[in-house]
Image: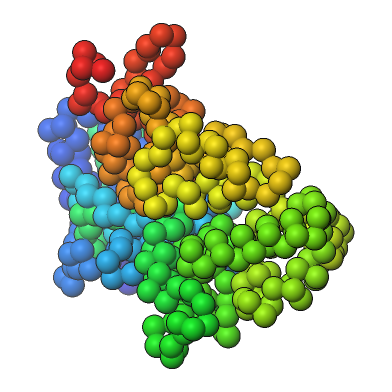
Length: 475
C-alpha cells in the first residue's frame, strides 16, 4: 500500500492538527503533574454529540446468571400490579427493580477502547502499521529530497532525527479508524489520538434485587372471588384464569406455580379460585369423619372411595385439592395411586388454626386439650407444628397461645420486623425463623436479616432478638 501526493498532503494536514492536539494533551498532563511516560500511549478525546440525550436511556444492571439467560435467548419481563413496585422476571426468578442514583454522570459512548493497549496488538496489525509508516516516509523523501528509497525496503523504525515534526506518521487500523498518531518531540512513547462520542448521559440506573414471590399479591387478587360453596356462586365477573395470573402477578412462572401449590387454591371451571378457609375446614373435617366411621387409618385409606362418598356434598375438585394439599399417595411411582395417607403435621396444623382463628389468644392448657381431641385418631399434636401461625406467651399467667399467621404480615422486610416486635418484645431465633424465612433469598439468610434489622441480647443463657431502638433495661 502506498500513499500518493494528494493522500500524503492530507496526512500532513491531519498530522499538523494532531500535533497541536497532542501538545494540548501534554500541557494537560503537565498541569495535572502526570508523567506522560507513566501512561498508556492511547489518548482518547471525549466530545459530546450535538443531539445529546439526558437520561434518555435506562441502564439495567444484570448479574451473571441473568445476563447468561438473556444472551441465550431468554426473556426478561417487567410486570406488577398498579399498587405494587415493578418487578423483573425470568422463567425461574423474580427481581425487585429499584432506581439507583449515582453522584457522577454515566456517559454512554461509542468507540471507546478500555482494554486494548498498543502492546496487545497482534503481530499482523503491527506489521501493517509499519508498512504504512514506511510508505509514507518514502513518499515524503521522494517529494522533498528527490532521493530513491527503494533500497530502504527493510526499514522499520523512527527517523534518526527525533526533533523532526514528522518523526512517525501512522494510520491506525483498529475499530476506530481515521485517526493519526504522532510521536511528540519530548516524549519517549507514541501518543495515538482518537475521538469517542458521548451520545447520552445517565444519572441513575435500574438495580435488581432477588426477591421471593409476593404471596400477599396473590391473596389480594383471588380473595374477592374465593370459593365458599356452590350456593354462593355468581357470574364470572372478577374471576381470573391462570393466564391472567401469569400476566398480573409479580413472580416468575416457576415461582408462581410453587406459590399457588402452597396456598388453598384450585382451578374450577377454567378459573383459578382461592378456597375459603371455613369451607375447606368443612371438607377436611368430613374426610376425617369418614376415616373414623369406616375404621380406616389416616395412614392408609382409599382416595377413590373418599371422592365417591363425598362428591354429593362437595365438588370433586375441592375434595381432591384437600387430599393433595394435606396428604400424599403411598405409591411414589404412581402419584394417582388409590392408596392415600394424610400428612400428620399439615393436618394437625390445620386443626390448630381452626381453633385459633376465632380468637386472638387461647389459654395454653385448654388449647392443647381441645387440639388433641380435634385431630384424627392416632395423630400426635406438638407445639412445633404451630410454626408460622402462632406463638407462645409463656411470661403471662396463665400461659397463652396467640394466633399470629405469617401470611398476615407485610412483605416489606423492615415493616415485618416492626410488626414482629410490636406483637412481642423479644424473640428467640427459633421463634422468629418461620416469620423471616419466607423473605430469605440467596445470601440473605434468616441470621443475616435478623442481625441487620434487630439487636441481640442474652437472658438465662438464651439468645434473644429485639428492636434496635429498644432499651434493653426495660426487657
